[in-house]
Length: 278
Image (tube, rainbow, N blue to C red; front, side):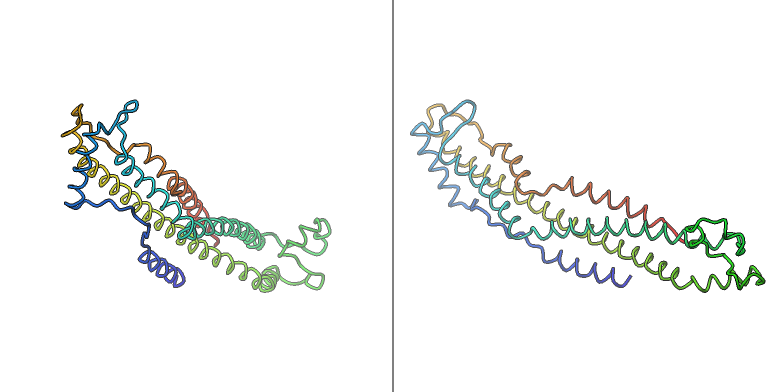
């Protein structure tokens, strides 16, 4: 239990140190920027810019604002490949360790259960043991030896129990230690998943903020355009929605896939911890 608390303490400190240091493209919303974009819009409008291709209005300014979103995507991708890949590695490593531990616990459970149940079998005399298969004889704890033919059955049980008590208790100790380690592995899995969720929220907030800034800057630009553009259009240009899809793909935070692994680990943990030895 103390080990689990120490693990939680370390992981809590790790969470508090997580800071998203992704280089952000400049997208100022100052009064100076507003005036500059309006002036640029007036200048472009006078020169019949932006121009429409298909249903999309294009100009160097519009493309520059969209490029800032693409730049953020690129910066996030670089950040996670160089800085935070260890969080993903820790999560996958913890999942692998957890799965191995679950197999170990089931193996120990089956073996320990068989050893304990062997004490409940009948007492076999030396003559009766001749009809047993070699493996059955080796596994049989309640068997009299040739020098014990006249001994009481209860005495034989006590003697056999003492002979096999030490290895059974050792198995029992390994079994409960493995359960404790499984719980520790699960704490690491959940904590790393929480870290990834935290980063996911920060990245989405960062993306939404930049898109909002880009749209605000474009609205200022269009305020200048419509004053001088021959068509007097008032179409509002927004960051293309496809950029969001590219963003979701590139930053490689597939939370749904990771959450599926976490839920599978939780179900396996509940199943394995429910195994009990009397």
